[in-house]
Length: 182
Image (cartoon, rainbow, N blue to C red):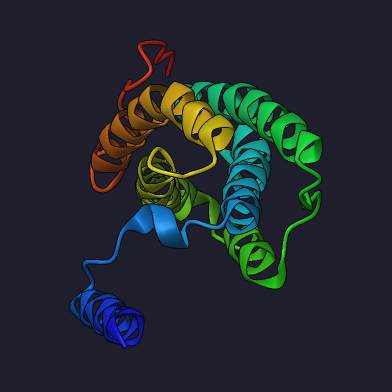
């Protein structure tokens, strides 16, 4: 009887926590979901940056794009290695949602390209920082450690993207990467 009451109490507390949004994120952080989301974001950032490297009229934006390609390929490779060691599925192509983001950028007029690309990168890095921050609390210690190692770099990317987005919104690109050559 005591066990039944205790089980009912635990279920009630868990239901209340979930309804209030206060459940432990570690309990819901599925490693496979993290890998899927992180890889989709990383692959998207690489693909958007490949486009920007060719399409941007600004040297600062092209330099930023080059850095994003280099850094995200490295992050993606390391995450894929960790995921494969755990026998988790590792996406190698974009899903429909992320492919649509890439296609949208490919159709932006040249005059609006830098503003659209840098705003997209700022938005994507906000999501990535949130995703990796949550993953630092994962019960999967290896993925949590991976996320902790990558988080400072992703936060740096976000600051760079935010600065470029502010600079391209009205006055043209400014050097957020310290290598402005226009």
